[in-house]
Structure formats: structure tokens, C-alpha cells
Length: 182
Image 1 (cartoon, rainbow, N blue to C red):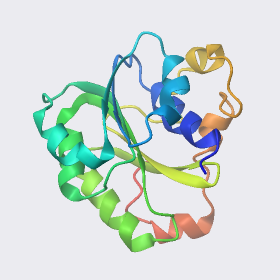
Image 2 (cartoon, rainbow, N blue to C red; image 1 turned 90 degrees about the vertical axis):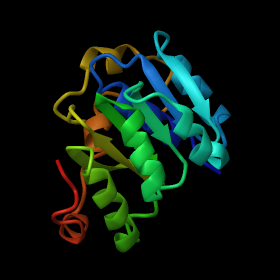
Image 3 (cartoon, rainbow, N blue to C red; image 1 turned 45 degrees about the vertical axis):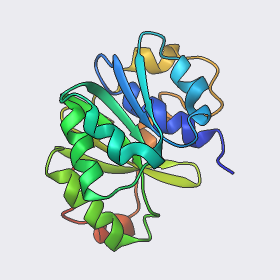
């Protein structure tokens, strides 16, 4: 079972990095997992797509529509290309991915993301890791401290955890050399 850390980190890292997140796309079959965390960002409009329907549903979305995309959907190249297409020029995405131990699978995902995103970095979310990809903002340099400090009710996420989540050991750095883009 997923802990409270995972949804907090999936939602707040990109939403507290983007300068003005207004339109959010959530791709998940377990959207209730994210309801409480997304509700903390009151000024955002949220579009939800079930992971199981993502392939067809995302095709019908307009280009350059979303500031942030949160995806637990497939990491196939076609879906990632559609996510890039519906993402605005300064968008961030946070996606679930195989364990960092699955180096080859992650290299493929990161190479696909590199076609459209300048920054691609794994980050810790408790027992899970997530991938953050950004077209503009750097997740540790551009954190909106005021937003991250003013959000209340978290069990885990805060303005200190946010940049610390991106710390990786030398083994990860070596394994992903040339693929992680920060």
C-alpha cells in the first residue's frame, strides 16, 4: 500500500516548483490518493484521466494546455510524447517509473523525455522514486519557498524535504551518467 509520502511528493514537488501552476493533468487509476494533496492548491484547475484510458483520452486534449502533469500511467514513448504535446512551454511533469535499479528501463524513459524536456531528474518519494521532467524550471533552484512553506497539513513534505529529495548516491549518478539532465 502506498504511504502518504508518495502522493505528497508527487503533487507538491512540481506544484511548488512551477511559477504559476493553474492547469493540472492527473493520470491515475487511484485519483483518490491525490485528492487531499491537490485540494491544497486551491487556484488550480484539475483534469483527471484514468491510467487505463490514458492512451485514447490524452489524444483529445489540446496542445499546450497543462502547467503540470502528474502521471502514474504507462511510460511508453507514445504516451510520453502526448504528455509533452499537452504540456505548456514551462511545464513540469512528475511520473511514476520502475525502480532506479531497473537502469535500462529508466534510460529509455529518460531518453524519450529528453526529446521535449530540458531537465530530467529522479527524486525520492519514500519507498518509491519518481521522475521529474521540466521544460523550464529547476526543482531545487526554482522552488517557490513561500508556497511550500504556506501549505499546511502535510505529514512529510516541506521546503527542506523538497530539494533533499533530489540527492542521489554516486552509484545512481554513475549508472545514469549522460541521461539525467540537471
